[in-house]
Image 1: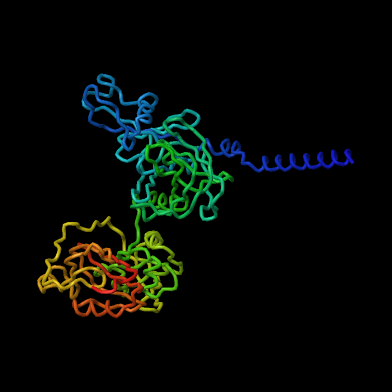
Image 2 (image 1 turned 90 degrees about the horizontal axis):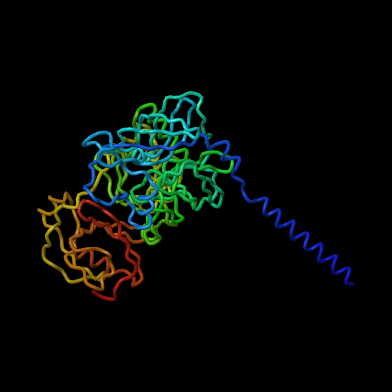
Length: 481
């Protein structure tokens, strides 16, 4: 019996060891990837004229406030030469370090726009220690992609993969020059796909936990097949160093940008002329939509492609050119990647029905910033607070002319217990409830609408603030005004 027990224990131990070894073999080995693709990754340094700091000034690094990180920079990263050591009086230089990768044997290199922005001179260093001067072919600040060129032949190049086939949890590898340490290899997994970042509407970022630090910018993100699937661009950090959140520009986006930069020296983007916002669950309920999806149109620019196509404020765009718009952030990407002058179809949810509209895409010229200095309407005679806990008044003829509105109610007071997240001076244009859209024309009309609602009703108000228009959802009413 003891011999049998020993035999079973031995078999169990053997099986356990085999399982451990099998699991060990499943861990990725990056050595071949680095050997085959690392030679195509380059170190980029730039110089530009700057104002020399005064005597005794402490060297600073933009965007980095942590003292330990600053001390690291002061000790280990080359700084501009001191007085008498630079290129000449009145022309000191600053050096920035970044990364890039060669995409053609004749020397075209992809990197980030912010790596080469404002540079007077760009220097590229290969892994075999050869140095080249580079010129900028073009840069696109909206996607942070730049194409530069060095004079060479037979240079090593990367191969590209399809970022759309990436899966969350998949292993990825970055090669770059963090803090100036050339050809540093770091690895991690894909944390998420299609991330939207503030002020970055045209890039569906790949989020990873790969260690990315200053100097990695512009370097490649590889999958385990040794294919470039992204361009490392940004990190989320409170110190300036890596904190586990890194973002890469998908390779297909970068390739499309570089193609336009190479052919035209600039990037042409589509636009249709709408201001949009995300559709929340409450908004979907108010507009009678089956679930939160699409992009809610706050306003339509007069004379724009959307205006000519018949798009209206309060429409919810649920599809563009046959592709579903699940989030409001999807629409700018889809429209922006469409060539100006081409025809596209819009799927629009309007008053409980889906409609198809045809639009001729225009060209995005420049960023538009809504003015914060627009005059606010002056209140007329006040009325008692309504079931939302706000006081509203009708616009005067002068105010309607000034604001170019035919109707609307101005908020003159917001009580502490107000249900609506509005401010004094806001103009209420429309109320939406269960898919019904009602333009607000008088205080009496608005208060009657509110009085007829159930205590737990969900409504949406179209609100104008300055030159911006947005939708505000309110859940529940007070018992009385």
